[in-house]
Image (tube, rainbow, N blue to C red; front, side):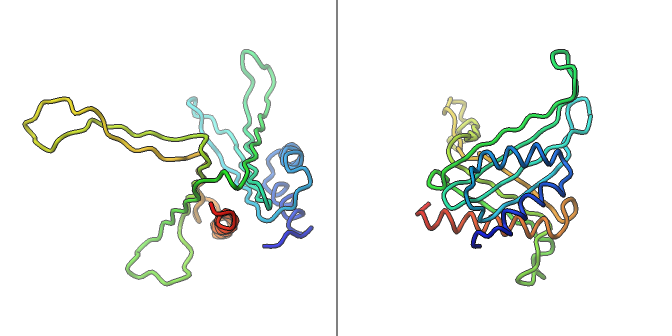
Amino acid sequence: MRETRTTAHGLREAIRLSGYYPDLVADAVESALDNEPVLSYLVHHEATFDPAMEVRRHITVLVLSSARLLVCHTDEHPPSDTVTQPHASTTTEVVGLSRIQSVQVMRVVPEPASYVPGTLPTEVVLTIGWGTVSHLDLEPASCGDESCEADHGYTGSMAADDLSLRMSQAADGPEGVRQLLAFAKALSEATARLGG
């Protein structure tokens, strides 16, 4: 996708249409982009639940430029003992495309035996890893002998998981799933061009 003014305008419009503090979110994204051309973007607005079972809103904005991936998260917070007014926190992270180690796309397709090529998945999970956050899953190792009581230490696996974003047709509509797939494709192509 070539950058056009339409793409940058589309990003601003998608942020506005999310209805979630659009001026705050757009300002954070634009200041982190610093006038870089927008190649692709994704805006995902979701509700989250805190331990008190209160609904909180969260928005994630992903922006792909020719050299960087911008990740912007904005959360809202209720008044607390230390902050007496409702407030929002916005975090932006800019990652050089050369640092991206993996772009993983998981698609969920019902009734795979009757799958027709081109059918839209019911949900998609995009996971991007650039080495900042890794998950380590450990379990006790064994030798295969059920009667063995020796300590064989631990075995496990480590996976990069800096960002994971899920969208489904049920929650985000078919267009949301299409947009996530399009963004994942653009990011994969951009990192492939850099040898990632």
